[in-house]
Length: 129
Image (cartoon, rainbow, N blue to C red; front, side):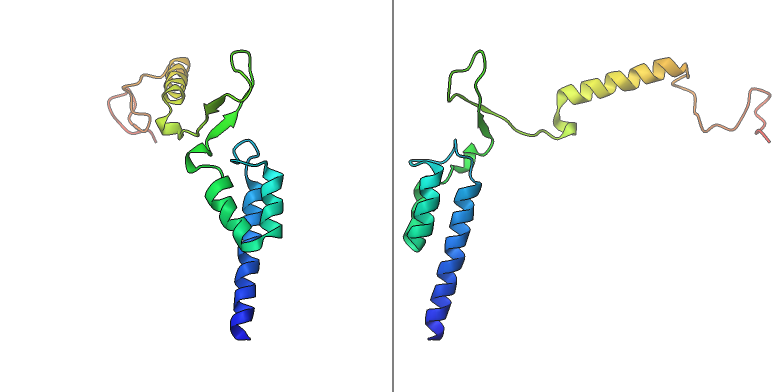
């Protein structure tokens, strides 16, 4: 009896996992069947449906960064790769940052060689009091 309850619990957890996994997938990336068909199969055929979805229907690991776009130069169903780049790896961001910092230095009129923390004045090197 204890093994039967354990098997039922494992079946329920696996069915819920695969159903939620199928529901959360991008409909344009699900393979072989439409997304809603995979959800129904996962619910109606608990173990086998989940195994089939994981092996045959789920999106491929490399396809998470692609999106289906339609634009002036793209036909229906063409894909473009999109990815997030960290700011320190993005050359455009670094160039804009460098330009902005250079323009800030120019607008303040400060001498770039002058130390802003220097407490000495031009009157003989005596500290300001």
